Length: 242
Image (cartoon, rainbow, N blue to C red; front, side, top):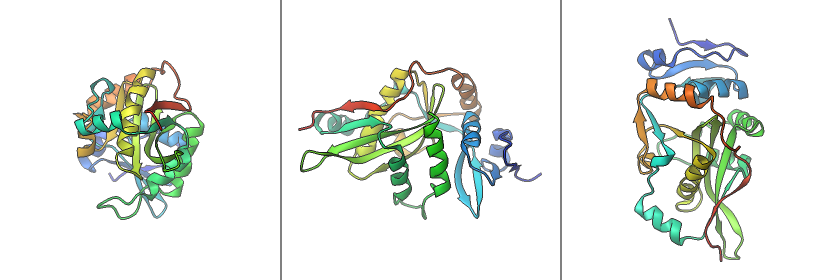
């Protein structure tokens, strides 16, 4: 039996465990990418990795890299930057621009971006529905005006935040955004942050590996629990700007 074709409008996903054991994590392919399919995918630990010739490829990764907000680690050099640098961090200040900047970032070892226009449209739809959120780090320029320096975006369902992509136009900007966003999300009730990939960058923040079965069990529990307060458009953290 081959890799499943996901029928348009039918958001059911095959068991990711089989994909992990037989297809290197490829759960299925689809012709559609919309908010309904994205939400169902995330609830099962599945995410769209890339598109090709009009097909969207849906993957699961195991073991799964996650950050528990109460175990967030701030590297010493970043802690110093957080104390001494002038910056401002906001939530949902310019979601569409953050996604576009993530798509435009040139990344070592990658030929182009997976965040094609169809992805940007779908995540903007999720944002308008209250599920997708961005966090922005702003630095002051020579005139004292703050300008977007970096940030990231992801999807929040219940008490899980699924991180998607980061960008930095200035040094440390995406790191500052993440370091400030995690405690903010925790204060609203988020208990688990999905990092998808096990990277050195996220290990610096204290990411841990969960067997996929354990990860999926946590999703079933936490996705169903609402936040104490919704993630709105607000200021998350601010150092003295002068």
